[in-house]
Length: 110
Length: 116
Image 1 (cartoon, helix red, strand yellow):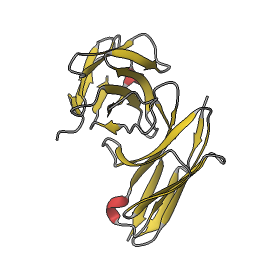
Image 2 (tube, helix red, strand yellow):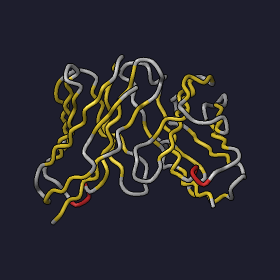
Image 3 (cartoon, helix red, strand yellow):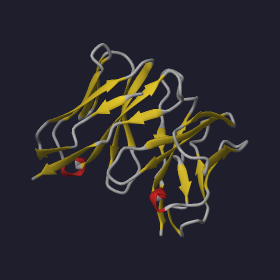
Image 4 (cartoon, helix red, strand yellow):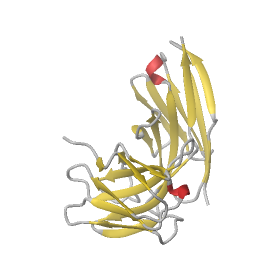
């Protein structure tokens, strides 16, 4: 099976930086996704890491270390609209599916 | 270009009834996956279809079935509905089967099913 762990909830101030960690245990790792999901809406694709290192996309960056089974999503210059759940999902080479963590609810305060 | 579209957006059904949910993938995408998301949890995988064949099945009872049509759209069917089937049902579209490297998945807006 797979274990994907991420914190349940985080609070940060507008303009600040927040780092959401995700650890996983899996065999046949074939990539890790980060999605943003606002309440009552569908997940929106943020990033996909398959190789070690940092991927930067504007205010959002995602990091992967395959040897450590670890990823993080970094949100910079936080805005109120960034208040949402952030989902970490792992893809395996076999099985044709994404396995999601429980999501991290981020609350941005003024 | 239209993204992943799902219908209906909301649905209320009674216990014991059956339901059919529909999904149209992004144009050019040949793979569709279905996920169930219960409130407060991450999505759980139900099925994946690629080129009209089932390529993966999650840990769901036989009451759940799906199929993919020649135009790559898909239907998810749930029979004998239970209260616990109340959830957001998400469809994800990808160009290839998800087992392929560098294949990303994009979600539709979901169908919120309430079973009463």
